[in-house]
Length: 253
Ligand SMILES: [Zn+2]
Image (cartoon, rainbow, N blue to C red; front, side, top):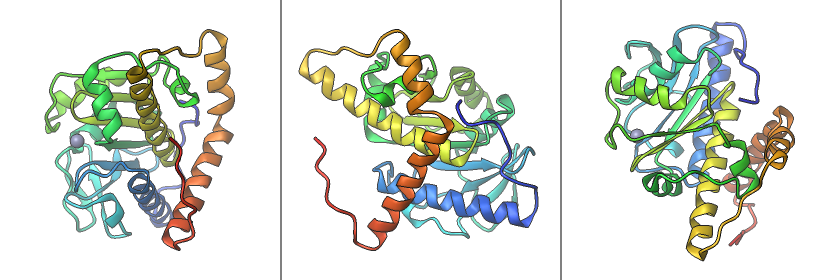
């Protein structure tokens, strides 16, 4: 992954407050970017370098997240702090954190284009800039299309992730990971966009992606740490405009 594997501060109340604030913003961004599905999906962030993580509670939409919407969860799924119910797909998060010490944040959504594209089991072509960042870093999980409720199944998902950045879950959605909340959220937005573009390209009957060094050079420049940070900042500003009713209409396609 691009962002360095690092904790987001010292463990303690200030860290928890900062993590929860950023997680809340990420929830709202994921909703704004069309990744909500009723009350499904989760986002989590590891607490420092510990085996505990904050996760959005069960049975709420991403747009409903607030400072009280998160539970501190142990690797066994037990709630250590907070008042909301730990979501039933906590095993995804525990399995990935246990397997990947460099991962500090995880997004799981039922993003529609990722879900449709994942059902096709086709390689993601580096068609767009977004597609390039997942070249060689996108896993595929089809052990089940059902909700992932146990650590054994989640461990297979972690296998599919490997050292990558994301996994497409057949007939289910996406999982993205990052060294930071910002990276995991930006990657979720990018993966959904890359899947949407490839679906459109395939419908046109012709598809041709970037090749060779173009792919790695795009990843290094367009998805450098600094660039990902600017994408997050842009999404934060866009969210503020949407909240204030100031966002200009956009018709991209
Ligand atoms: Zn799910």
